[in-house]
Amino acid sequence: MRELSLSDGARVLAVVAHPDDMEYGASAAVAKWAEDGIEVAYLLLTHGEHGIAGGDPVQVREIRAKEQRRACDIVGAGELEMLDFTDGLLEHTLELRKAIARKIRTFKPTVVLTQDWSVVAPWGLNQADHRVAGMAAVDAARDAGNEFLFPELGPRHQAETLLVTGAHEPDVAVAVEQRHVEKGAQSLDAHEAYFQALPEHPSGAEIVGRAATQGGEALGVPLAIAFKAFDL
Image 1 (cartoon, rainbow, N blue to C red):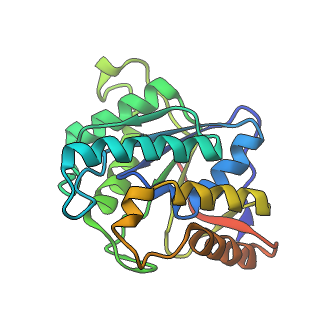
Image 2: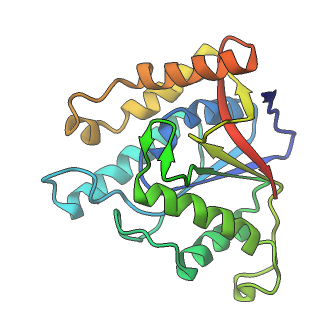
Image 3: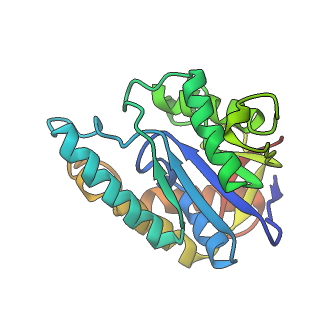
C-alpha cells in the first residue's frame, strides 16, 4: 500500500451509477481533495429513481437528486451531472460509453474515479448497475483519449489515472483527518429519504469510519481511504 497524493492542477471526475455510491467512503477522500484545492466533479449515470421500494419513481428521482447535491456540498464536490439512464437496467453500451467520454472530454480530469466492477465485491455480491458503471468508465476513459473514437465530442483527452473504490486488494490510499471522515459520514447521512426506507442501515459515521480505519491500518496511518489504482 502506498500513499496517493494528487499534485497541484489535478482534477478528479467520479463516475458512478447512483446517488449515494460515492458516499460509502470515497467522499471522505473528496473532502480532503477539496480542502486542498483540487476540483472534483461527479457524473452519476442514473437518478436512482428505482432505489426506494414503494416510492413514485418521478418523485424519488427529484428527492435523490436534491440529496446528492447536498452530499456534494458537504464534502466540497463542485459540478454534479446526473444522466437519464434507467436505474436498475444500466447496460454497457456504446451510448453509455459515449456519454461518459463526453464528460471526460469537457471536464478534462487527470483522475477518473469509479466503482468496482467485480461480480463478487469485498462485501458480497455486487449490484448490476455498479458493475456496468465501473466497466463503462474504464472503457470511456480510454475512448476519450482516442481521437478516432467519437470525434464529434471534441478534442481527445487522456486522463492519467483510474481509481476504483470498493475494490479487492486496494493498493493506494489517501491519508485523511477526522474532519474529512466526519464530512464523508455527513454526506452519506444526507441521503435521508433513501435510508428512511432502510431502517437497519448503519449510520454514515459507522460506515465511513470503518472504511477510514481499515484504510489507515493498511497505509500505516490513523485514517485513510483506500483505492485500487491503474495507469491509463
